[in-house]
Image (tube, rainbow, N blue to C red; front, side, top):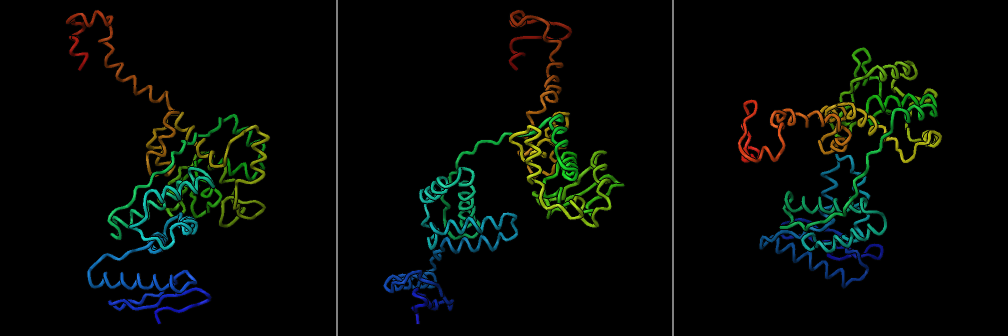
Length: 358
């Protein structure tokens, strides 16, 4: 039977000319509507088989395939939640009929509920799925353009060594060691509190973060300073597997009430635990660490991420800027008006208007 009812909802069940069985909910309790959808699907299956037309894939088809192919993504669970929310607008919609304006309206709806950056995550997911459907799956001829909202660049928040001393004085001993290790290595919160002894070699003064533990999915080598080694040495014997513990149990969270209260007592406002990583990177750049070396040390995959710290190294850049000045030093001995008045030779350098322009 092509149509049957189950719990007040009509279902469609038929076999295509190619032998494929189509069984799905009509998502309606009205038989005439279910019959219309049934006839439409059956006619489409016939055209695909007999006339070679491209199947009309729906948003549901694309969402399911996306989740299947992207199950390895770190943000897979986030995609699941976003797709659940998007279903209220795109359920059953034919991909080729989804327009730019319709996507923009969905973004505006989310923007009204949350914020621009959050709305952008939903819009970016729609864009990624539509582009994959077009360029990789070849389900549609053209992917609609999706415009994201402008996001303000987040200011890099870091604190001074003196502020760090004030903060450490307010922290419990076990958290003090965690914070000092984070500042000494620049590791993210999860990598610090989840660090195992199997990832540490104190004798060789090194530690490592496996690719499946890193945000960039690549191994990170950590060179241990004297400060980092001292912190690790104090943790020895507290737990057979994990490095950082409290009362003999592994830590599972660093952004605790004790951490937040310590910040208040130290007079440090607008500071997150992740800003310890920014502080580490800022101090290194301010003291002459090249950005390429910083990228390797911090495990950033793209140079764009570390360019946020470039403005903190004016003295280092001034050293390079001085090279041009030193090369032109011998030419900078006369007033501009004198040099441009005509040819002049000084210390073997001929200066003319044309040579300056070049």
